[in-house]
Image 1: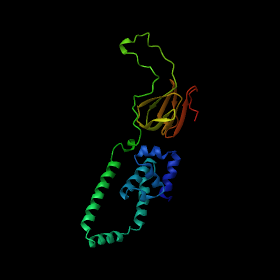
Image 2: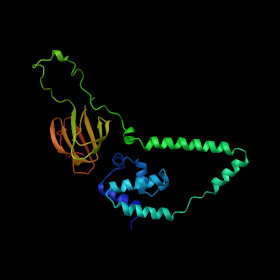
Image 3: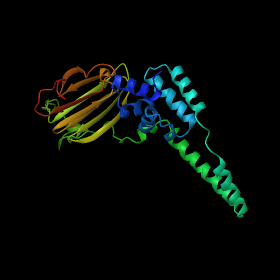
Image 4: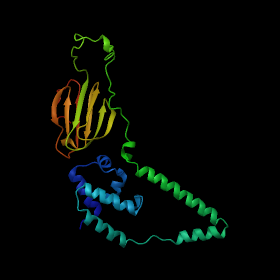
Length: 252
């Protein structure tokens, strides 16, 4: 049977998933996913988390989780037990030196602090989103002076359609969730996962760049022109729309 790490890597590359996309989708940090593919299990927090992360990752890649876990258990059972002589020697030296109780109190306190920090880092429901920029959904850059007329002074004669200035991209997610990152004029203005039915409206003066993890679930409209879906289901797509160019889905 192919090694676990190679099996995971081949499945990920076949689906064209990036570690950045998988971190959002599985809620497992990218460095731990990479460690699983490289079979560097000592990088993971511990055996319990290694098994949980491995099962979640294999299931998301649509692999046979039972075969994967069976091979991991065989490998873990055949691994040599970690030496414990040094710890006993350290404890013996501490007791002889008269600082045994103090050392044990310090070790217990450090273990409690480490456990609390670990729980705060990995058990928070929206841990992956905490590292993403907090972009208000309703705030967009508007040309100076727009929408400054008081509501009570507006009349039907004032509501004259204005030409689109810059680039405006509207994204709508349907069917399945999709992770995406959006740049406006070189600055990241959104990074996160949208659920089916959610919509985002972005504006830029010169260009908008899209990096989408599940292109088949995202419908795009540029400057009012409906371009349909960005690509195939499960495919990662990168698209750029610039001012003055006819919007289409063939540009990179």
